[in-house]
Length: 263
Ligand code: PEP
Ligand code: MN
Image (tube, rainbow, N blue to C red; front, side, top):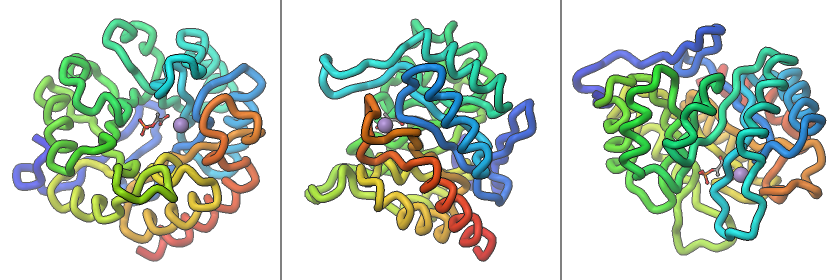
């Protein structure tokens, strides 16, 4: 179902509120790694909206490497995202980690499956029965073919609204958090009709690398970007080192739109 052979036209994902991914424009999804409090998420939401983002991201359930690290505000985080949405009109994108939480995601606009759950097949099957877009991130050490098969799990259940996300993979390079596989964009777009976005924040782990990688993503024809933005990165509870300030995001947004218009 994800294969372009049987579906030559690009899939365009349109939310009930009108925002689109895959229509030829560059969709910007931005917000903090984690929702921390009402002031933080609302401030970031207002700023990224003003800069041109059409979706707000923010983690409520966080898949942290250490069990002692901040795990997210969970249900309260989703409530705070809903407040930010009510204030700005931005649809919300947030990660699900367990099928048992699905009820909490009723008002979430786009459900994210994180890299660590790309092959959680029971979760993927459950999301196949959900009537909303699923943002499926490539696993830390998964091939393009495996990513497409995971999309297939969701689509096999009847949910065609899958957005693929390249977020960097593990290589021997240690300078960056991951290595952005930029060629994944044209390859995925050749093999599949699904929209493809890039996450330059998790791909690099370094805030000054986010903009050049975002420019490359726009140049290679990505349908969107998902970028971490925090009102005070040095105090962020998660991923401060790769988070942009709202001012930095504003600059990036203008530059990537210019690139995107020329491709
Ligand atoms: C995230 O987007 O917050 C995240 C945890 O990303 P990934 O699953 O790509 O590591
Ligand atoms: Mn993060």
